[in-house]
Length: 71
Length: 481
Image (cartoon, rainbow over all chains, first blue to last red; front, top):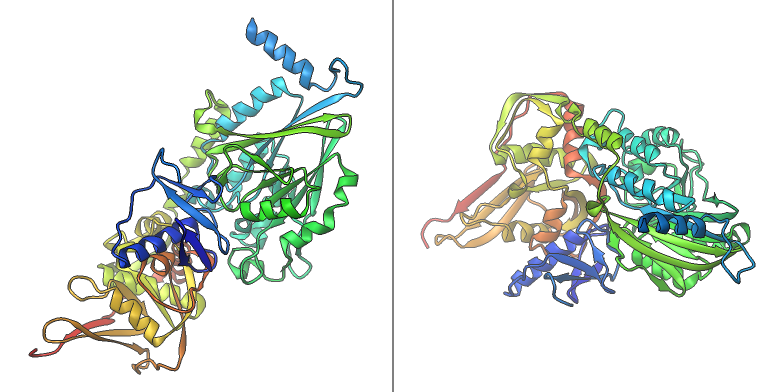
């Protein structure tokens, strides 16, 4: 299934959790030669916090935030 | 004095016997505490008990509900004998009124789930399933709780994955038919005529909850789970209050409903950080400590008659367990995910969680030879040795004279090189599936079982283990340039 991390599309296995999507996102960022910024909070598309063990569904969007910084 | 006045005021206001000036109908205030995805984390139950106790001084009508996934996540509970017993014991003592069956409620198998449901002093509900073909008794789809003269209906729903079943191991769901949760909900609008308020007590993720709110505005509230969403400021979606309390019992949600006569005139939600609660129920705290200190993780599950030393040999054992778990063609394990150097003598549950502490799920996928070559080729470490172990065959890494990768070859157990025209069923930890640079068409699916559990099952099954690894990878460097 496809989900979005910081608006970047990433393909993950069905049943993937938030942490799996983040791993895939970082993997893609490294491949593109981009640096991976530190984050300490993950939110959904309307700003609710989600835990890294949270389940994802098709086309879901999550955002990695550093503390105190808005998306 | 001020506190006493405040408490007396709230008691009168919320007790249901107090008529506000100008109001001709009796007002009833109902407080609903809700948790979801607690995943067998017990530590904050003593604080939650204190919170409930204090709320009951203020409010006559206090309910406690769970939106599913009460099991799986704490080995002290998951490997307790019987599995999950401490979780239900704590929920009984907390006075839970309801639990919706989440996908992880199936993790211990149907027989254990039946036992835990029998142990519970509260009902387990779920609407979108038919258990006729299994040993699981059909749960009630909904349950109506009474709060004074008011009634509140709770409808239970659980998510389905791409296979049309909840995200749990398929073996644990045999004989049960599942239906779309959102479509199933459409058949329960009649609950608006049976109760003064209707609440979805769901376990299918926040996005599905907001979708349901847009489709079915007859829900007054949706209390959800599964996506581990923490709605710090629960909001109305299409006039439906949608809320979810994170995970692991870090927070408890609180929904307050105010009825005037039978009419629900106000609803609001909030989140309470259990780590910030002052005080705790000391009896419960002692019980949680007792459960935490039990020696369940020291239980011996098997014995290595021959020491298994080094990550290549440990990787052989691990990948063989994965492959045999689902009769896969091949299985893989990343060496970085093996956190011990050896397994020797008696093997305890704790040894497995030390070796595999990350909670990875076993992922299944169908791949081509070139996709497997891509996985291995991209996993080469500094010495050109693959950073993954294989089961089901062997790997040859061919380098030129300068040490540059030329080709990866993979052979099956008959030592035939894989065919480019074939597709292969493979298993691997979720970490490889997501973090490795591994281009493939089929992203695969989570099997609903963590890799540590596969290893525990394998060792428990084999008991006396006389196992030695084998050389499954060779790096061949061409002579000259």
